[in-house]
Image 1 (cartoon, one colour):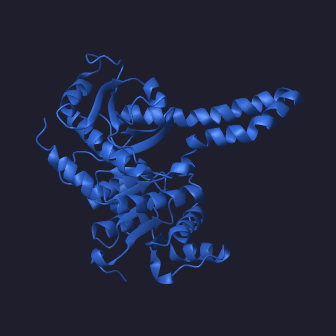
Image 2 (cartoon, rainbow, N blue to C red; image 1 turned 90 degrees about the horizontal axis):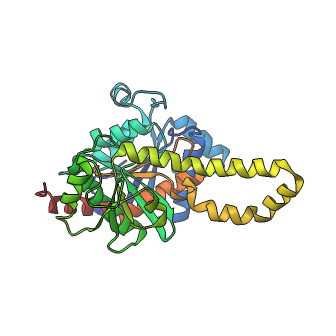
Length: 344
């Protein structure tokens, strides 16, 4: 079924058909949409074969039966990640990660259990040599374009060396994927002054200064939306809180608009007049546009999506995986980590 000689193959992307709150419906339809749009990669669906084929049939989607990989087990959202990948070896997440490890696939995409996806990617695919901790990045729109935030929850209690790695990997990702030449890098802190921060951020700053990254020093939370820098580096504990708060703002704004409209008919008319404009403006904050988040630092391409991912989000996750393959991100990260291996 597979040829391990990747030199003669297109990019091979495996999608977890059982991942997400609305699996396999959204995962299957979104993945097939991505393939229909691009068609310059090989797509594999991993999960319960009968369920996958049912979705394909009901939606009148054409897909090669030989590219459906059966997985009898499913890691549920409530499962403990490390326990689940050991106790469910025939799950879609474990099989998908193993395919990348065995060089039978180049990328794995899942909207399933986030912890299990991170654990499987790290423990099964393995880390790139020299990477202490893989990192998850999140794109955020700002006044000048886009910022990326690393780390947003792959791990907590980072050491200075880890923040250096986030800066290196974040710079490569932002430059290659968003086309920002020599992106500016800043460490998220409690003040812009060089003396501000805790022991970890202060030590990390000294290490990043020894690289040729475009490091500008400390940045504050307000600088993210201002677009002061392109890559914001922080511990995953802080980054995850920040991202979760940011995601809640859009829902809060929708609530306030509805509340305002419900107070009077004239208010409803006012909202109606600007609704299409507001929808277009707020589109940049919609996670579906970005799909999922990359787990950088693992020895393969791993894209992790929201549990509530729509077909559109899944489609964009698959296309992002292809883009990372095309830009040779794993190799570029490995070379850069090796280049700065002696910094301490």
